[in-house]
Image 1 (cartoon, protein in one colour):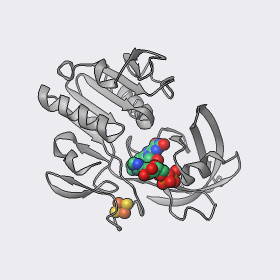
Image 2 (cartoon, rainbow, N blue to C red):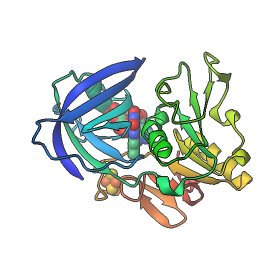
Image 3 (spheres, helix red, strand yellow):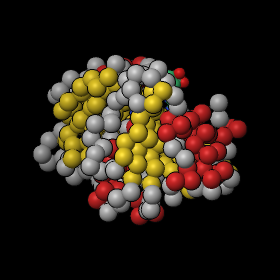
Image 4 (cartoon, helix red, strand yellow):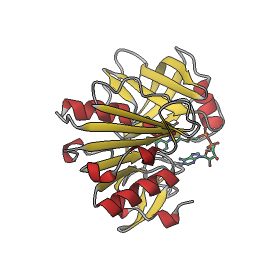
Length: 256
Ligand SMILES: Cc1cc2nc3c(=O)[nH]c(=O)nc-3n(C[C@H](O)[C@H](O)[C@H](O)COP(=O)(O)OP(=O)(O)OC[C@H]3O[C@@H](n4cnc5c(N)ncnc54)[C@H](O)[C@@H]3O)c2cc1C
Ligand code: FES
């Protein structure tokens, strides 16, 4: 894990309120970036004085020493990110957390994304393809127009889309796109109610669920305990014990 000043290479709008940011090292002699595991995240902080704390954003793609992030504007921190222009500096700390164990994902693999939860799956899908996994399906759900789904083929064999307003794909929820019984493992990233529904389906079907959990984060490195969630193995920090957890370990009654 390192904290480095990076330079913005691109920051384009991919859908209303959704941006793809790419950053590179600030100089050719900058430290070679650490290997990034899919599902890990970085803490990003612009030079703006407010908000004081950096924001956690998942790794979306790695190309050489260029890191890409896909993010949704929610509040001041992500608004500052959206204002970045090529050449601007950005403080990047990472890679952080425990990501997806690609070696442990095999057979019929389903990736379930809810909204901006699609962000970590681009890099995961590529890692799975490079590891020879040929039975990967993506099911992605959005409120309205989908985003971030362009580059998945040929890494996955099937892309299924659901939108709540019916503007594309199946009208309804992402969980209507699949039966967990048809898969050996279901990997999910999205809002808590979706994760709860995904894990409930997995439990009923006896299918392994793997969840990338979200939490408000202050430090990102295990010190403040602000990101803890309740699990079958006690209170765990999303930033260092996760964000990826076995689904059956997460107590959803502790979440909003
Ligand atoms: C491990 C991890 C990876 C993440 N990866 C991505 C990513 O790839 N792309 C992306 O767009 N976002 C990602 N997020 C969420 C992102 O960190 C938050 O949206 C961001 O911190 C919001 O900051 P803000 O200053 O813009 O908004 P704030 O002003 O801090 O918050 C705006 C609103 O969003 C809510 N909120 C903020 N953070 C969270 C959170 N973590 N969980 C639930 N609600 C929250 C607040 O309660 C508030 O209602 C990730 C979060 C975690 C923990
Ligand atoms: S964010 Fe501080 S312990 Fe996780």
